[in-house]
Image (cartoon, rainbow, N blue to C red):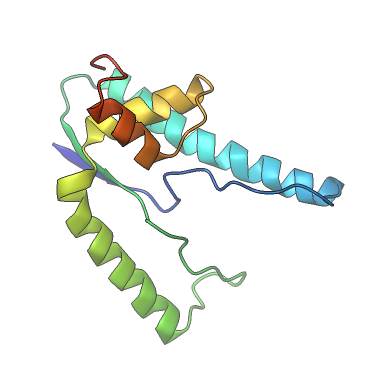
Length: 131
């Protein structure tokens, strides 16, 4: 049994690119590349190890504090991160079954445009077949 803890958000942030220049686009492209790379790694792990039970996939429900200098967070930033992690870990038992997360990531990879919450609502309504 494996529990996965991610350091990036489960949902892609919606942005308004009005007024963006090349640098903004390049930063967004790098962020999207990183996001999809992490999600693809989870899908590859699931297919590579079909007998492993991926119990929970936990990701932050909001952005983690950011600092350009590695490992130089303030005490308040660390405390906020710990509280977020504890709350998200508790919520994972109820909300974030790995099967749902992996199905959501697979749909995103195929071009679906939805948040994880929208996916869960549609799944409970029977929109998607069993994964």
